[in-house]
Length: 176
Length: 176
Image (cartoon, rainbow over all chains, first blue to last red; front, side):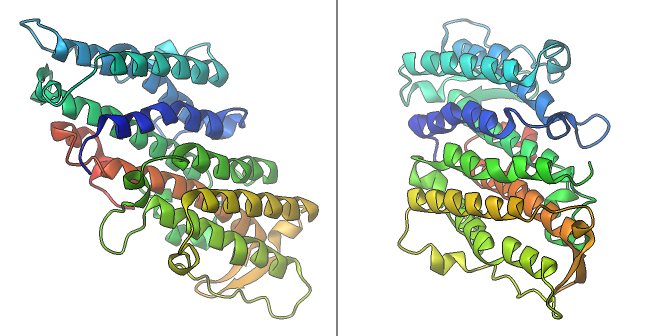
C-alpha cells in the first residue's frame, strides 16, 4: 500500500475513538497492569500518544515544511508520559488525546500537502534525512502499533488463566 | 491477573464496538489487505470471530455445564470464514458480530456461573481436559489477540512507506 493522505487520516481520526471504546470505564487491572518491569500499561501508552501529539508529529511536519535553514528535529522523549500523566485518570487522558488529535488533524489538513511537499525533508536525530511522506506514514503506523500493543498487554493479563490454550495464542508469550 | 467473570465481560462486550470504530467506513485497502500468502485481512478476522460465536465458545461452555457423559468438543474450523463471509460486506459482518456477541453474553450471564462451575471440564480435541475457567479466559484473550492482529496487519500496509522509522516499529516486521 502506498502512502495516501486521506487514508492516513482515516486511521489518525479513528485512533482516539478506538481507545476510548476499548478503555473507557474498564477495570483498573486491565488499564494499569503492564508486561513486567520497564514495560508500559495501556494507561502509559495513552500518555505516550498524547506526548507525541504535543511534541512530535505536527512539530516535525512544521519543521519540514518551513523555510528554516536548520531542519533538525528535537529528540522525542519516550518517557515523558510517566511525569505528564501523573494525577490524571484515563477519562481525562482519553479526552485530552481526542481533543489534541482533532486539532492536529485540522492543522494537517490546512497545509494542503501536495506530492512535492511529501518529498521535503527534515533531519531526524538518530537516522538523518527523512521525508514528510515517511513522517506521516510513521504517525499512522505508530497509532496502529500502539493499538496492537495495548490489546497485547491486556491479553497477557490472562496468560496464566487460559491453561493449555496458551499454545494457540502466541501473543501471550511474545513481546514486540 | 486472576480470571474474573465480570472483568472478562468488560472485554467481550467491548470488542464488537472496538472493531466497528476501527473498521466501519474505512478504505478497502486497510480492510482487505493481509500480511501475505495464507494470512488474514481484518475482513477475514471479523469473519473468524463471528464463526467462533456460532460454533465455539458458547457451545463448548454448554457442553462443560451439561450432564452429558461425553464432553468432547467438536474441532473448530479455522478457515470457515472464507466461505461464510463470501458476498458480505464489512458493515454486515460488524453488525452480525455485534448481534451474536450480545446474545452470547446474555446466555453467559444467564448461567449464573459460580466458582464450582469454573472448575468443570470438557475435552478439547487437541489437548484433552480443559476447565470452564480456561475456556472463558481464552474467549477473552482471543478477542484481544485478534484486535492486536488487526492493528498489526493494518500497520504493515505502510511497512515500506515509513522509511528508516521501520527500525523503531518492530510490529512492521514481526508476525505473531
